[in-house]
Structure formats: structure tokens, C-alpha cells
Length: 200
Ligand SMILES: [Fe+2]
Image (tube, rainbow, N blue to C red):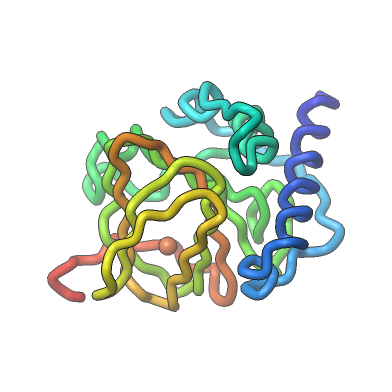
């Protein structure tokens, strides 16, 4: 039991350390002070074990952070946000997130929300949007990110991508998985919705 609590706290400390040296993160939102782990049940989904089995070696950027999150995978409350009618069963088997920090997170705060987001290889997360302003921060792996009418970009570890309120965006992976932080601020009560690309 102690190990699990240590793992949560080590992960938070590592995130705070990265926040303190990364201006993109600290400019987006201040890291919440004095976060305390609360009791929250774990929930396993298909990607829980895929992330648990995905470890990085020493020479990778954020190897320590990645492996802490990978070890945490069985103890967190995973969700995949959408239902089968919206995104299909295959996507739900390849996608998942958990709210590490936030109003209903493992660490509770109303200052912001930080979701740990996992997308397996050869996946397509369709166009979606939400009211919250959002910053993606890539921890490991890579994916193609698209927003509005802008040209697609391939994002890799330490890259960030900002999405304005209600700006549609989509993510595609090919031969790599991706682990990222999805950070929300302002109006994070409303969940993300799949949107019709024809309506863009
Ligand atoms: Fe988003």
C-alpha cells in the first residue's frame, strides 16, 4: 500500500520538477501547490496493461517520468470518455486517460486539470472539441496533431500544442504509441465531444 502512495507522490514531484523548468507549462497554468492524494478507486481498461508494459530505457527524454506513470497504470482510474457509437470499439481498445490532478482527480484541485492520455499505435482520435483551453505536453512517443485549418504537425517528447476553447482537433498515430499530458484550464466542467468535420 505504501509503495502505491509513494509512486503517486514521486510522480507528482517529477511533474512539478518538469513544470518548474518548462516555460510552456508554467506560462499556461501554475502548478497547484500542496497537492494531497485522495482515496479513489482504480479502474482498468484495455490500455492499462499496454501502458504498464511500455517502459523506456535510460537514454530517452522523460524516461523517469514515463516509467513512473507506467508503473502507476494499474492503480489509477482509467476512462475512455466516449461510447462505442461515437468512436467505435477499436478506438476504445487503444485509447484511455486518467485524471491525475483536477476537480475529480487522484490529486484534487479546482485550479486546473491534468489528464494523462495514452493512445496506442495505428489509432485515430477523431475531430473533437471542448470548452476548456488545453495544452498537450508530449511525454513519450509521437503522433500527428491537427487543429482547425492549420497544417498537421508531428509532435515528440517535450513538444506542446495549444487548443483554444472549442477549437476542433484530432490525433493520429502510426508506428508509435503516444503518452501525453492534457492540461485544461478555465471551464473544465464540460467534457470533450466528437464533432462533425463537415461543420468545421
Ligand atoms: Fe482536447
